[in-house]
Length: 367
Image (tube, rainbow, N blue to C red; front, top):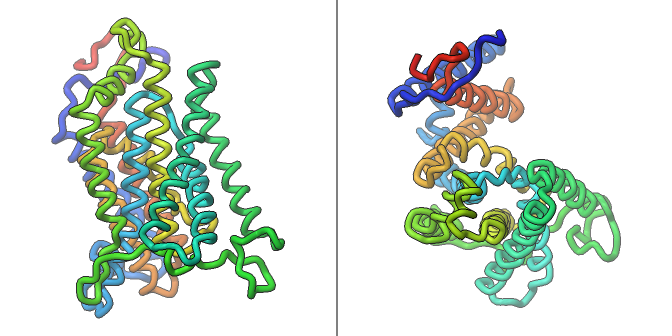
């Protein structure tokens, strides 16, 4: 085996990538079909409901679309944020922790906002979330620039620290803990005042959440930031070669600090929007977007338009699995999570196979 090694394909093509993705998805669905048949469930019926998210024949289809938006917005913004850091080759694995940091700080504002104007309240929630998460990212970047610490380990530890912080807030019944309901003997997170809950544009029975508008505008801004500005160009240069960036006279340390603050602040914004939309905070408020966002960013090759499309597809998958799970008593949310995991893993393997190949030492990538 020492005579073989992995090489990047120089003949990489989008057509091959799409074919490999299709093969990966088919294989994952076949595995899922076997699991479904073992539970005496028709795979075609299940997949049909999953892919349509249960919209066909549903009198409350608008509720499903509203749920889809709640899943899509945090995932999109978090994926864009992580993609920004990854483009600079700064491995920010702390999306979960930064999201929880923002959610906690946004909740502090929400629970102390009685009597405030709703618009001002939501804006302050988002600003508090962005600032707190941004400072976390800035601190990690500063340690990297000053002491060359491992950002992967640093950001990974933040995930667990903040998870236990929010668990502590949710489990500790005390006079100071305004996060909890006063009318419950056991610790339960309380609901935000009405003025701290995200509104939307009413279109018949459907309500278009304002967070979707924010997410779309942010996507456009990030696209132009990367493609059309000097700062975006600097990120790409640092990602390609920090030595080249230094030779060109760029302040690499400052670029790292600035970009990580923006990246983490964006995750904070996602948290502020998500908590305001949910009307409360919880240990599951992230919906694992910090982890899923990594997959979305890499599958999209750090391309902003591709991140937007991939986030939609992943959100449809999640929402569809939940809708299908409600139809079959033998299946719970755990099966939906398993199926999602199989599909994502298969696509990642397909992406790897389309990008790399095994070759003998001394052979070229085209061999």
